[in-house]
Amino acid sequence: MTAPPSLSLPLRQLLGDARLSAQHLPGTDLQLWLIDIDNMDRAFDPDETRRILAAPPYWCFCWASGLALARWIADQPQQVRGLRVLDFGAGSGVVAIAAAKAGAAEVVACDLDPLALAACRANAELNRVTLGYSADFFAEEDRFDLIIVADVLYDRANLPLLDQFLSRGRAALVADSRVRDFQHPLYTRLQMLHARTWPDLGEPAEFRHVSLYQARR
Image (cartoon, rainbow, N blue to C red; front, side):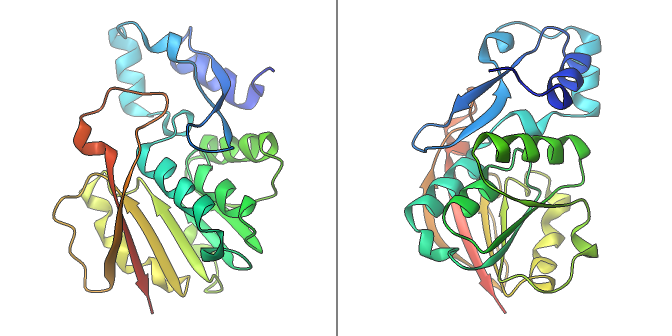
């Protein structure tokens, strides 16, 4: 199976010998186009490091919080079945795809990065689901039953977004493994989930503990 040029060409421009492969995610029935782990077993040269820092290819990894939330949705499909769902900061689209497979009435993958949206499209096709796409959360109407969010709070500058999710949806689910002092009056921690980023980046064990938060208006 050959990776779509819309993804493979930009990745090669970033990392000359990097390749994508369709990989099964552990503990799920999902596949994603992800960076081939064989291409990670080397040191990056200074130019590659600069390019990665300038435009990180988030979309070619399945980050721990996204994998954990996708599994949670697969185990509890009633949480999304029949709902209109928007996946904020969709990245690879893993959580959006899990919601679609679980029976959501509509799922919109939302991301500012055009390559992330291209990855969502390719991964939706790989998993035989239909998604909608949006590049601007704030251009969306307040019509969603649920906003799903994973791996967005890695930058504390994004914390104010927690106040915005309920402006477009009646409820929000946020999965995060980075913020240890998470406190927000609208959000309650539902449970602790466990996952690791795939392909495995060897992240510290603490980042494999994913907290799931819920808010309702």
